[in-house]
Length: 194
Image 1 (cartoon, one colour):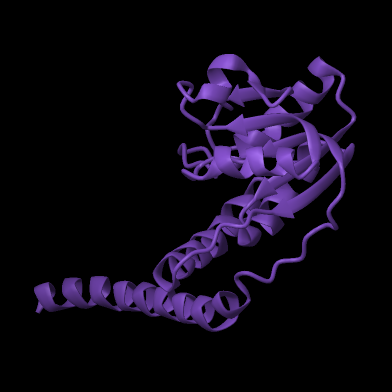
Image 2 (cartoon, one colour):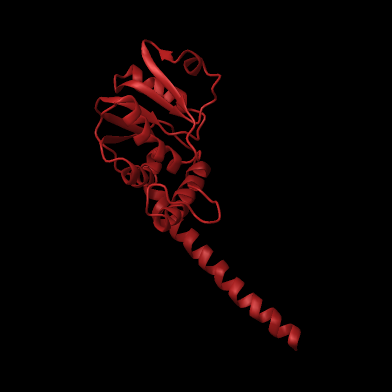
């Protein structure tokens, strides 16, 4: 009898947590996934600096394409391998290229790094580039850290259905961390970062 009570005390809460997670995942699939690539973006324009967020293999090519399109004069690439030609030379078709490694190496770290770089180099305007569904959360984090002239532009990278679903779920759950860490450099006490 005591074993059954102990088992039922564990099973009921576990079943409740599992049901809540399934409900949350279902809501994400129904409400977030269809609008995944529809996040609002700023109109295109020219900024002094193009600040490309990291974490993807296509980051350098996207930034270089934006330079070619005349969207900026200086390119900051985050999280890239430092053996890339533009990182080694610091130049691309006459444009200055800076390869950066924010600490922590997260979106929040990139947001914390931006105002330091803006002030250090005397830059006055920036275009932050990342994949479209990442823009709303990135905008929240960056606006906490930097109040200057800033626009957000989507990359042209396209994802398959499985990648889109994984990224939609990741972005949805990442908002929880954003909600409980309201300052520019707030972190979770147990080390998870955004």
